[in-house]
Image 1 (cartoon, rainbow, N blue to C red):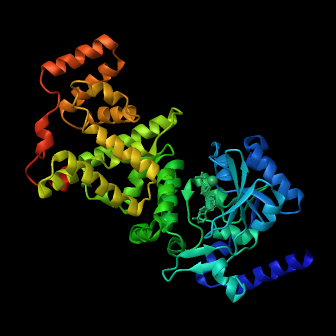
Image 2: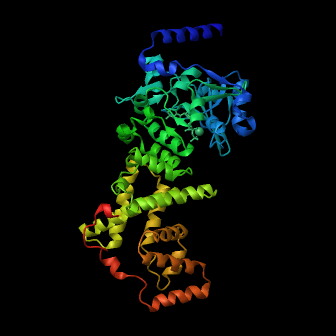
Image 3: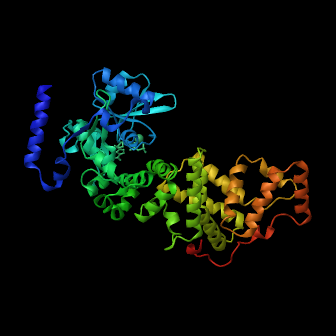
Length: 472
Ligand code: ATP
Ligand code: MG
């Protein structure tokens, strides 16, 4: 033990003596330890399962810390979304300690300890890649970097100090020790938290190149915690934003939900747009962007995100399919008109061709899982059927499993489209809430007034002129 400490001190002295300008910044920072009475984190604010994991690791002789969003949010007096743990035990050692443990991830290997639906994420301290000395055969498994500097594997283990430097932002690199209940701060994170600053650890450009998702995370934390992105951290984002194109679409789907469906979606969207990041995630939508944010697409995005934030604020569930369906609606309408115009297909057929096109294009950047794309398509398809209410049609429509979502969608469209759509939504509102007699009377009126379906719409495209992308 004494030897390890000596080595650490010697290595630190060597670093201090030989350092160059680039690593001067954070090596000058000393470890600051905040005692229990100074930081105000109490064990009763930490989930029982996270405490169980911390204690078990500690009892087995490993170091165990609460880290990341858990500590950050508790210091901000907020309820953490989840609790992440860092330890010097390797994933295999963790697995031996917990029966309910699953090792996951190749790029970033870590342990999930499962307590029913609650998952506690346990990560082994990461080290610096330059220091990794695995055998040649193992090397790719442990550490790999693309030519552009992106980390393809980040499984070099190290000390807590190194782990702190490998984390993304200073506010995310605070360690709450289960042994003595102190908070260890190697990167001046507490000060940044006090000043509400999102600051990347290390050289921003290098850190963004290693993992471009950190750009999204910078914006997410700034919006969610109402913080400012420090200038050096914000500086390279716009220029490097296109690096997001190299990130697997499945990871970007997960990130997009965290960005847009966590309760601060509208603020996050505005900031993402400012940094040219939203455009990378939703290239189809950015074709409809205007200087003054006034296109129908932009109004719809703002509307659906505000509505989503409100639902989350009210403790209601939100469905990603509904949000994606809304955001992509006007690009779909424009595309359907284009397809009808160029192919001569009937509007309904052109609409369904366009729906497939739009989804195929969107999943290239954000891999929306099939269970959601099916719902999105259903919601869209139902929109074409609402106006056809004669005979048994209206009754049949109400039996559709996605009727409720499709109706909410129609009602929402009423805010942006013609009075006809708003009136149609009112009709359906009355119809679904009416009793048998009223429903029959309403349908009878439709029957008498004509087919209830503007048949001409099915045969001809709505507009003959090729629509301009900007106008929608
Ligand atoms: P949230 O409240 O959304 O959970 P979080 O900060 O806990 O925020 P997680 O994705 O749960 O975010 O990650 C836990 C911790 O792991 C982060 O706080 C950070 O220290 C580290 N981390 C996560 N992603 C990265 C990354 N891409 N690069 C470096 N460190 C990361
Ligand atoms: Mg977390």
